[in-house]
Length: 583
Image (cartoon, rainbow, N blue to C red; front, side, top):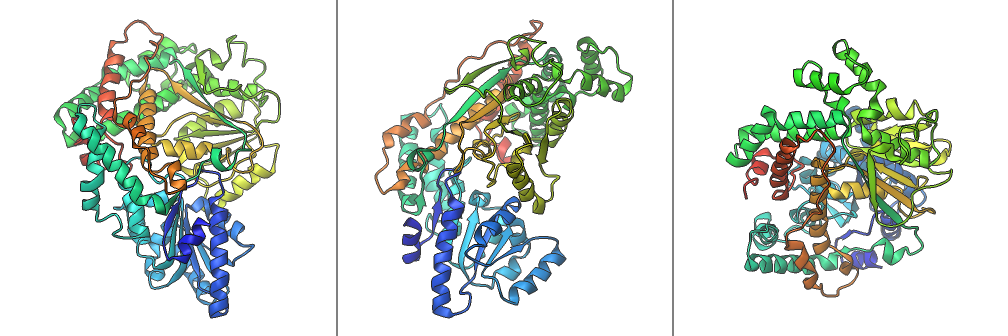
């Protein structure tokens, strides 16, 4: 009814229903109705529509919409797309489905055309107004413009301005006006050193923005409209670093790179900024598996390897690689915890060794905190395993999947975009495939993977919405079983900082676009007070080690200052990012 209301009055909007509530089908329904009316008025197939989506979903959209419209999948090389242009011009299709990148590359061909509907699936992709994709999409001319996204705000309220700049240019003013009216007050209010006046101004700005966009954003949650959906139980599994990881972590905290980071924080030197990102990536890799960072050519690394690897001294880098592979689960508690989760799901067989090393499960390196419910028990479970890095999935495949005889598929950046939907279809259709390994960047958007009921995160994104999108590949319309989500976290490391950033960003998004958008009721601004106050993180237990934890604690303290008072810039604007570190 809301989509029909927008269509009737020539308005545009954001369908921001919770992930898994059928935004695709709702958009298809309104496009089919509009197309039928257009065809009855003009004859033939009526006015055409355009759908832009991530490349993984092009085939999915075409498959879903083919029952009511005549889609053309617009993908491939430049030469192949030129051939498809001739096919389109010849007629016979009334909707074209393409990736955002194809839209950017061929905007000169698309811009002169007039579209009935221009639908952006996973429309938060245009949240950065400075990207070429965002600028190209905004050149499309359509009678009705619709954005589908369960996460209209991910990191910053400015992202909402970019989305509305596509829907209704000028509605929220220019970017400069928006910054002055809304963004600066919200950003200033989140700094704990600000006073009551700044907090009140931030509160009023968020309230004003919420009311301005409310009529054009429809937001409904699973609890509201899909009460029969089984629950989703999120369980944090805290792992303790292995002695080898602890040694490498401590060595890094004493390194020149760590010193440069501290100098960057104190001097705001943009020349040192690249080291910040390199260091964060190093620490994230180390938390996942020491093999991703250990370099035997570095004397300190070689010393740590010699001291903590039972396999003794390796001959050269290849020798140490073999030692680390043989002892992989000993030095990487996350892989050990993953193996134990699979054992609980009755997936795989590791010769009875999974529980013999430690009586308590989770590889003897972890404990868990959950939001209620029990873990998986009994056969029939199927698992999605998400990681940020393909290199980590390589280790999971080599050290967990293959030795355990697990039947699995992979879906990451190495799979051509045109083949990704087929991989998801195969996993859903074949119950003998027990595990699907995915990178969050590829597997978090749009796919329906309800054949799985267990989700494991080996690594975590600075952007909380990406992790939420990923876990909701399984927890969505059509799921019949309780979905258990396990987030493997390394205690007292950078990963706890990532969780803190995720909590803040979710609070910002929930303040501006929330379930109040299901109607035109006023927002209860009193509930926003908690958003702008300081967040007290629970104290973390001290890690096991040799008692030399001062360097590690100092390093973590520096990282807390670095990330708690800045928003992670996905566009990697180093100058802007570093400029915020001392604010």
